[in-house]
Amino acid sequence: MKHSLIRNIAIIAHVDHGKTTLVDKMLMQAGAFRENEQVQERVLDSNDLEREKGITILAKNTSISYGEYTINIVDTPGHADFGGEVERIMKMVDGVLLVVDALEGCMPQTRFVLRKALEQQVKPLVVVNKMDRENARAEEVVDQVLDLFIELGAPEELLDFPVIYASAVQGKASYTPDGLGEDLEPLFEAIINHIPAPRGETDGPLQMQVTLLDYSDYLGRIAVGRVHRGTVRNGSQVAVVRNDGSADTFRISKLFGFRGLNRIEIEEAQLGEVVAAAGLGKINVGDTICSPDSPEALPFLKIDEPTLQMSFLVNDSPFAGREGEPITSRKLGARLFKELETDVSLRVEETDSPEVFLVSGRGELHLAILIETMRREGLEFQVSKPQVIYREIDGLRHEPFEYLVVDTPEEFVGPVMEKLGVRKGDLLNMVNNSGQVHLEYSIPARGLIGFRTEFLTDTRGYGIMNHTFEEYKPAKGESGGRRNGVLAAWETGTATTYGLLSVEERGTLFISPGAEVYEGMIVGENSREQDIVVNVCKEKAMTNMRSSTKEETVKLKAPRTLSLEQSLEYLADDEYLEVTPKSLRLRKRYLKKSEREKHEKSKRNMPA
Image 1 (cartoon, helix red, strand yellow):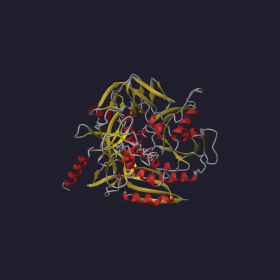
Image 2 (cartoon, helix red, strand yellow):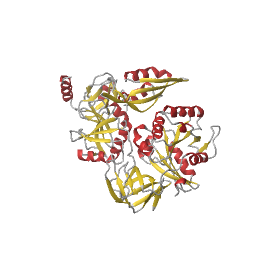
Image 3 (cartoon, rainbow, N blue to C red):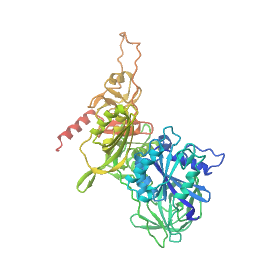
Image 4 (cartoon, helix red, strand yellow):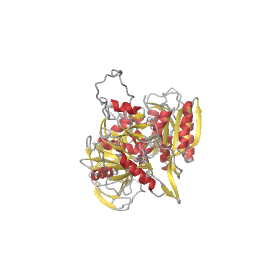
């Protein structure tokens, strides 16, 4: 295929601004599906977790034909925790569709993904989506985007970006905000006219960089990437040059191209085409596939370092092995190191203890997705509280800071600002839009651990918060964390209504009657600062005395159920989260009260 007829684009946006829905409609209108084919919504969100959470986690590519042109589209994650996916995708494309909500405008992840695109100097095309919304403010949003380009230091030639107005749900687009057209033709035309064709040598020796990895039980690891120079052929011998400069020779066993959502076998591909190749051994993201006669590597992909880490441990709770496969340290380590094959943003390190592995990621959501994936595979294990990763820069201790955007009704601003102040947040901007207050903060990443639950409580669920990694700055002093203590179970057994009723007045419960508990398991939150031990398995004593309240119906308040992300945020330094396929249990690191007291005493006696 002539490289002048190829357009490689990535779609970037903040979470839930409609980019995956837009790809759906582009595929449909380009004839990628048969007339009688059953197509589910958000067809590119193929991962179960992506569908449940409504976000894109893994970058995926597809290809559509528009007239004589081929448009290769990559749907990238919108959340900063999956930035490792975004960074490497920019090497595959010559342009980006920046999708922005016509009402919400630029959000933190819009800033994040756009910064990554501008670093690679790819051509932007702005799509103002959700024009069908009642309060759409397209002109203000375009001005916001322009301000963001200037703020991120975009070169002058990129400031004159084309704008398309669209409604992804309706599958319509136009060149002006006044009225939408009948279909997405204006968007297709804008891509053809404004996104440049791939540039490079068509006759030079082969050069192709791996940006995505896939796996097949029959073919092994499959490398997906773009041909940067020359031609790649099925069955040909190639050299794989790694990051450390070493090179190995392999023969390509299968070569695939992309048509719609399908992968099809092809014999060769030229400059600018996106292909998948099998038979290249343990190839990794960033490796360069070259001609054996000219093994010249492309610059290795720069990936931002992780900012958060936590310990993964073998499950040693009294309930270990009841609900899942109890794994040994060897199995746990093997599973974690396997994740490194496809996730370039993750780090896994062994520790002095053979049963503990230190796992570092880009944020709580990044680590939570790994935990959820592993528990769905039937594994059970434990994790510790997430901790930020400090760095030594110019002799000073630095920590990661987040750019936080908060939107909350005016009546809740006081408590929110007070909490963020305690957590060492610096207010950058504050705007009151008819009773809805928009706040922008620069805040240490550790200050946000555990904040979301408090924030939703303070704003009664009306508040919206989004954040993205800003930069490393000099570390600040101690910031506020969880203030309340916990209610820990006194003995192993089954929680009773009578036992829970006697405990309920002390705080908020996390369990219901009939729940199995063990000594040291956290069954609720204390209303005071200290931890206390409670007996939730207590049963009412049998007696032959009549009770005037015997027939009275006893009602317990509904327990607070914590999700995986909320559980991770809730953890304190001396607590673990036990993860099984069926349950999430918060527990104390030392289960017996005497052991906890002994540990606290030894901590107090340690020299400062």
